[in-house]
Image 1 (tube, rainbow, N blue to C red):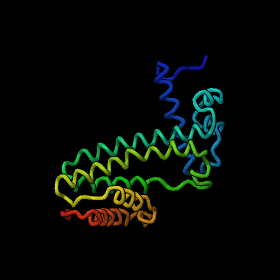
Image 2 (spheres, helix red, strand yellow):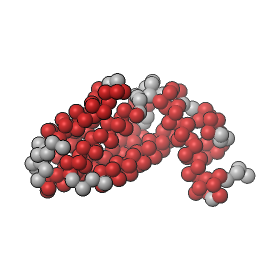
Image 3 (spheres, rainbow, N blue to C red):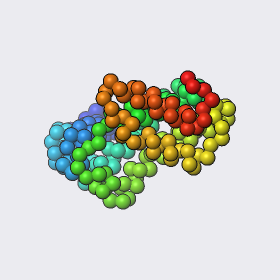
Image 4 (spheres, rainbow, N blue to C red):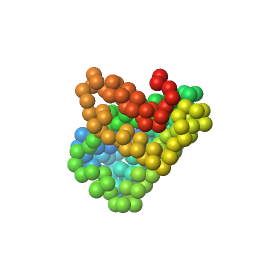
Length: 200
């Protein structure tokens, strides 16, 4: 019988997933999705192939589970950071800074683009994890309207424009010593875009 890590089946499952996702994270950004194999991930994570297949039947299910885990942890981090600020202007700045800092931390993996590599249903599952992030931005913008920090917004237009701007790698594709200046310039840009009445 395979050894159960962590003393219980649930702890074992978490430990296996943590090991596997650590390996996937490294391999994805070093080699790209195309070069990842279940056997290769299992070997590097110290798992047997059978154990790997019990958790992830194919490469696509592995990548979807990995992205879902990464997204869930990021959403928790984003909510905590935004909630730590009482003022909507500061909340908006925090949102912009964290989005861009995380984008800067994650280099694009080589090889096939994610959308091309996955079946439409799998890609749709991954894309759905942007919804809580978008909802967080909507909440901040509505709070700013209620507080009088900026005028009422057409959120159907403003939210996708802000998220598109913050998703552009050109914003953070600068030398490391210029990154914080670029991020602060983006904060000022977004504040002006929503008509913020504060400059701080």
